[in-house]
Length: 263
Ligand code: NI
Figure 1 (cartoon, helix red, strand yellow):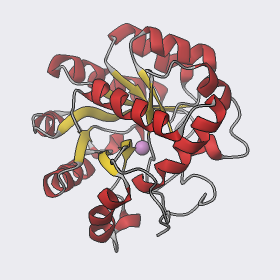
Figure 2 (cartoon, rainbow, N blue to C red):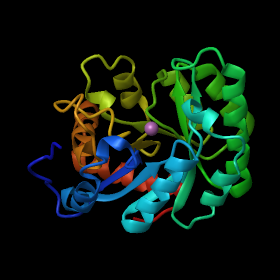
Figure 3 (cartoon, protein in one colour):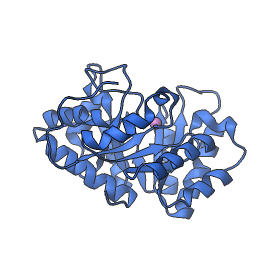
Figure 4 (cartoon, rainbow, N blue to C red):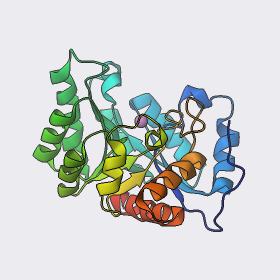
């Protein structure tokens, strides 16, 4: 696992709004890593479930580590593991469950079952609204339908790993929601994302890893973790012409607002 040599601030400023610490890629070093992260500047992280089983694992991690929160939900790729949302609703009652997620639409992975994906997404948007919880939304190559359902249900929350246009971001902001920015912003081939980062208001974005995936440059392809958010924050700071500390502080504040937590 790659660590940065230096964390330059005296205060822990990194808040990771989206990770998957139950992922099997962490199997051998999960305890060691999660114990080390506060020393690398991590103040809080939200570990997201993808179905009942991984949401349960996320809950166990949040109970073990003070700085971890979790989200419970059925990811569009995991629909076949479920018949209903009773398990998710039960987990959502936990005091460290801060959102329903991750939920959404993935037309890249499964272009043939759009209606079924939409049904699961809508059911979970309704659940979140009924429980007064924000949502963590996955949108891959499904921008129009994602936006339509967000407009229909008006949840609070974040469109994670945002990949839409600046115009779509504007519509997400108008709904009162946030966008999540991760390691992709450091990739050479990030297409529209730099434009989005340049035009977004600083009170509308969250930082995220999607760990173990999406590690920022120069660790692209390696195992990602919340400590590496510093590299994503540096890139955003460079694009916006502000300090890295400002980026981290804004994202920390926004994540607290989005999920109603204090870190
Ligand atoms: Ni994710």
